[in-house]
Length: 338
Ligand code: PHE
Image (cartoon, rainbow, N blue to C red; front, side, top):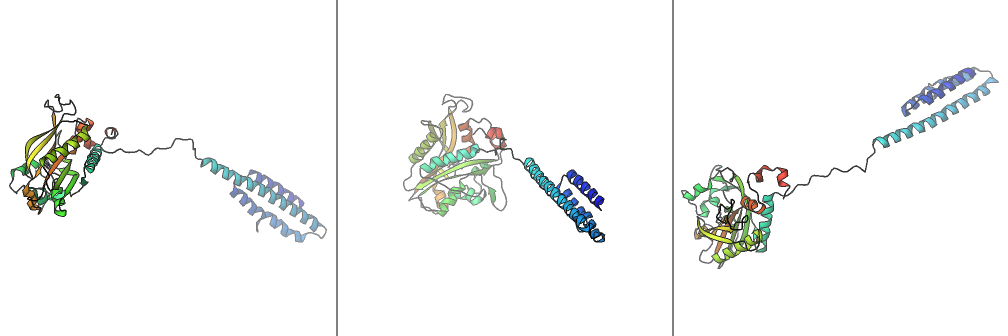
């Protein structure tokens, strides 16, 4: 019995020393000290010993058990510590590594121009109005004094949808929607997307305009020229020359095309202004009484002006962009420059 105990003790010490994981140590505890364990089995044999031997061997059994218990305890603690150390080193975060920066976008030049133009007109008392891009013929044409067979409809290269619906060809229908909702005085600008069936180096089937409308008592053509001069001076710099040429729009009378002195050559003549020294940037005019009739305004009581400009063209002039397609390709190398 003594020998058996001695063997068990030696075997246990070796096994514990060889074990590396918490699971292995728990396994060892079960095979030695568990209910069906080896030492437990030996203790059951104590009963068959003589009365003199029993207490001596009993003591020995106890001391072997204590020894195994304490060896297991130490080894378990060490194994658990290892486990934690391993997790700490494998899950370590290197706080000295540079972080991944989120890529920050920039505003598109079209948005920048819309914001800048809106801010200038906000300073002149104009607020921003909006309207739908899928528009009814009546708002896009009819109420703006383009009767069904009017030749000026041809100039607009309209995309038709169905049932008299179309993609708006200009932002002028917002004039109509605003005047139907609101009595004078009116001072609005309406930026937005417009569509025309036209596509080449200088035309895109989808582009942007900003409409302006001012209606009140006693508004004159002089006010129109004054407002547009203040506007172009603020947008392109003080003392940009402004010129009005007679033109035609069904919804304004008289109508004008507005030119600014070429921002590239200062009026001397270059490729951009085709050697004329002038750049056309706006259509404008006094609102035609026929338009007032459609929105139940009294043309005897009030008067006003409207204007409309292409945002792409203004962005190209302002930022020196030579090809309009760059504005729609969304190449970040281009867009990051603004
Ligand atoms: N809507 C016109 C166009 O798209 C521009 C314009 C607006 C002209 C307002 C006069 C007054 O060509």
